[in-house]
Each structure stands twice: as structure tokens, then as C-alpha cells.
Amino acid sequence: MAEKKTKVTTAKTSSKADEFRTKSADELIDQVAKLKKEQFNLRFQKANGQLEKTARIRAVRRDIARIETILAEQRRKAV
Image (cartoon, rainbow, N blue to C red):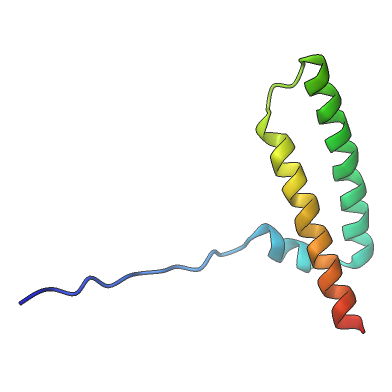
């Protein structure tokens, strides 16, 4: 008799998107502004060969995209 393997899936306890959804639109806009400044500084460091954590560029870019997506969701809900 063949045994069935059960697939166990666990939900993440908290994701970055969930954290961003708990914030107000003004807080998210401020966060995007900070992240864009950081992104500029990271690009500048990369151009000068001073960037140590290259993965941070990708993380910042994705955080900006997450926040902008959540802001768009909030705008659609408001209408």
C-alpha cells in the first residue's frame, strides 16, 4: 500500500507588504521619499566603486515597488 505524502504549508507570520498596509498613505509617501534618496545614494556609491552591499539596491527597488502598489490599492479602494 502506497503512503500519501501530505503537503504542509505554513503562512508567513508577517510580510513587508502587510507591514506597509498598516501605515497611512502619508507615512507611505514619506517612506517612498526616504527609499528614493537611499536608492540615489546607492547608485552614486556604485558608480564610485564604494558600494559594499550590492543586494541593497535590489531590496530598495522592490520596497519602493511594494509601497507604490499598496498606495495604488488604497486609491482604488477610496474610489
